[in-house]
Length: 110
Image: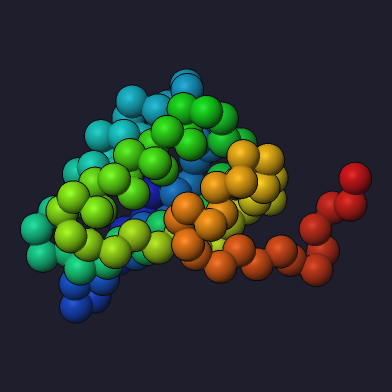
């Protein structure tokens, strides 16, 4: 998985640079769970570069949310890509994660 991480005072910012699909779910899972370390107060996950997400990618986000609750840190999903927004809207998961979803003005209209 390709990701860029930056940590500042207990806040870890992680940008996912790959699709979140079954084809890379295992490596993505290992990478994401590797960032769930003691001392992390908040994990901010930038999803802007995710061009494709399937049920395996969705399961990873749900797993990460459960890990955050269990380990006592905050998970924030930021800059949702169009693919992520479409899946969240289809399955009605936006409220579950609780993060604001901003729909860009230049979003394709189908």
